[in-house]
Length: 196
Image 1 (cartoon, rainbow, N blue to C red):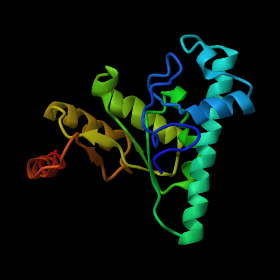
Image 2 (image 1 turned 135 degrees about the horizontal axis):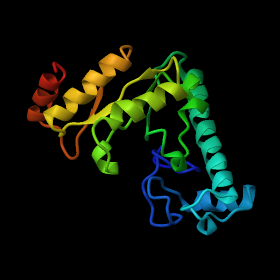
Image 3 (image 1 turned 90 degrees about the horizontal axis):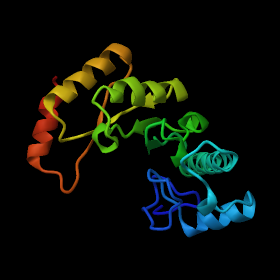
Image 4 (image 1 turned 45 degrees about the horizontal axis):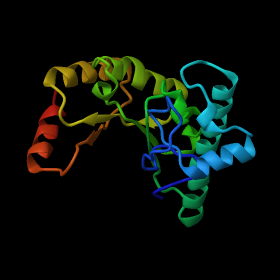
């Protein structure tokens, strides 16, 4: 599962990306499929403006990723019905990555929006006010497990946890991300942070 035809979270970043598509990735297969199926060369898309080609690309790519997720759910059900199937997604406002959780939420057990606010130059409150709120709006009724970095400031965790408890009491578990190797110190920090 290292790669799939429509790029996205399951695929490694590749150097051949349309200008402006900094939050997503595209393989040569994706470019070829776009040329063949929707008669559009992604290299020619102006990603800096709202235009017909960008909307066509986004709709096509988003539909393809949704079909892929739905197909995975079918394969899992054929192997063993009832298996949990969670999906990590980028924040819903990043439309260009083609991950519209609303198109596949009913086929997954959980959605884990990656809430890495610093990576995108956002303030800590963006996690609750945007990422969690938008994911809930797109995927009502689906379990949401936000993904937090392990190295935020304690005040940032406090702000986010308070907002989630206030606005999204159904959210229980969190997922944690760390670059590199997990250490006992990281596990101890997470255990302490969960108590905030």
